Amino acid sequence: MSDIGLVQKTIWILRAVAARPEGIGLSDVARASGIPKATSHRILTILEREGWLTSDPDSRRFRVSLGLLFLLGGLLDQESAYGHAQSVLRDLAEKTQETAGLDQLMPPSVMVVAQVQGPFLISHGMSPVPRMLPAWRTSTGKALLAWQDPESVREEFTADLERQPSPRFRDFDAFLAELAGIRERGYAYAYNELEEGAAAVAAPVHVGNAVPYAIWIGGPTYRVTEDLIPSLAEHVVEAAGRIGRVLEMSRRSGGFGDQLQPTSGRLVAQRAVPRTGTATDSALSADAGPAGADDTEG
Image 1 (cartoon, rainbow, N blue to C red):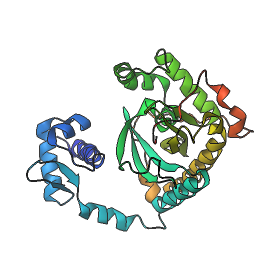
Image 2 (image 1 turned 90 degrees about the horizontal axis):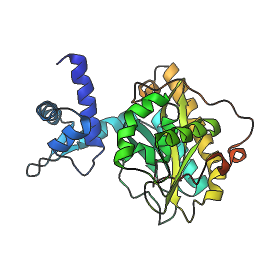
Image 3 (image 1 turned 135 degrees about the vertical axis):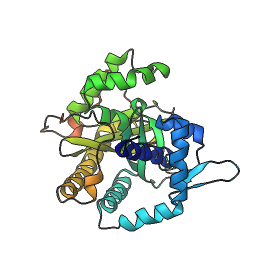
Image 4 (image 1 turned 135 degrees about the horizontal axis):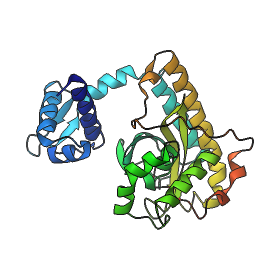
């Protein structure tokens, strides 16, 4: 195994463990990362020995160690891009009165990497972070996929869509058509798609020619109604722009933002055509039918 291959596999395994804060066993780590069990076991053992992971002696389920969390917390102070992103999420949650978050694409899923709970008791803030969600059924997944090469999306996601068919899309071409609409209007939404009664609105975070993240707000459909989606989208698009500008400045200066790269190597530099109107101008009629305001997040 080359040094580069080992580093990449270690990152994949750390992501798999981080996505399961309740703990994850060897077989599930191998399945989630796509790395053979023997190799996964060797890497997990090294990470545990170095203090980056811990494991339960009885169940042998692995978790990210408290030491690693403290290490990262010390690096990501309030002056960092991370601290700024958290501040933007807090502002967005306050403006929309719904839970806000930030997701990253990890085909065939999206990972919720940051979240700020909204003010209401019935919200999505109690779900653990990080967590994995199916990309094509979430607003953030669609917002991220909309800026990828369509044929790459077809190659990576057709099988997953066939395993879990959606009543919203008669075939994969219909799904790609929705992604084209998202590029045009600049935001995505989902409604009763990941879970009945859940809605979300998302916008891509542009950093240079890449779209490494998407920002979202989510809540129950009785509050996040279809007629409110365009106005809520204005706040989400504005927040995504704020985060993108800071990450771009950080990237240029070689700071924390330089680490914020897309997880898919097939992301294309396909920016939306600048619009003269607001998100309201595009209304819901841009879609053939009710597009979901997503799950509880993405």
